[in-house]
Length: 400
Image 1 (cartoon, rainbow, N blue to C red):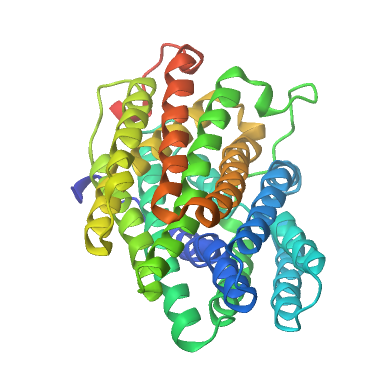
Image 2: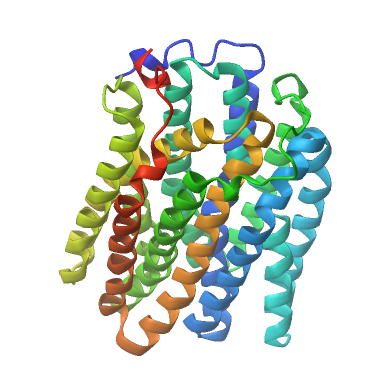
């Protein structure tokens, strides 16, 4: 399994941007659950907590493609620093507004700015890998590695926030997320040697979302994001209902842990199956894997079920980003990747809002029906539109 990963980090500056990207991306698994913990602890309302977390995700989803276009046009080193500074100030404002019991609109306003200034560092890191290994078999392995990094973040982030928020202070999780964001983002901006070159945009004012395949992928990842957003919030409530709220982070870590294990395996293989075929099959397994959580009422069994349910996440994300890299022109690559993040962000927002409402109305276990339904919707859309993901006949990077 380790073989294909050997030599991946040998290039000049590669280790530095990988490490910076890892640190800077930690908040993506910490913000949502950190906001839920903080607001639910101080207001007692999961609905408000989910709505504010959803507002943050929607703002990120709307702004990410615009930020991606700025990065493609001006370069990462010029765009990252001002966004990082404003993001830090907005997150501090959200914590302060909550602590001072200011009106709810201040929470939504702060969350809006937090989301709008959050950077899609995962897209930027993948764009660096594309600039280094584009057209070679190593790109498949690099994208697999990045998916594993994402899952390591989603394993450690929720658990860290849970420990900090429940054992130290409701503010602690978001404060640590803020520190990770500033350090990682500015460190990535400083890695000028490996940032993709700014390329002249040759398309006539086009945007990647108008490419049919990218539009389809965005719809699929919208539904997947709804799964992630709802599972995050519902699982916190599930643990709370069973009297073990501190276990919520570890339940979510189990979900991401399954994805991490499958990502390592998936990236170590040289696949003969097409990207399109891998994507559709991974989606199907994703939906099937979520069904058992509808029938579980024990926390320990739920941890095992979430671990198994996470197995199809990494393969789906890896193939989705690989398809995106093949479908969009190089001059729009960061924006194209950002549209996938945007779709996920919108989905997370929908899932967080729906999960909060359904949890308060029907209880956590019953609210998981929404998560499973969103996964099934992703499969239906992906299979129905799979012809839009057919690539021109050419050697796949995964086969070299």
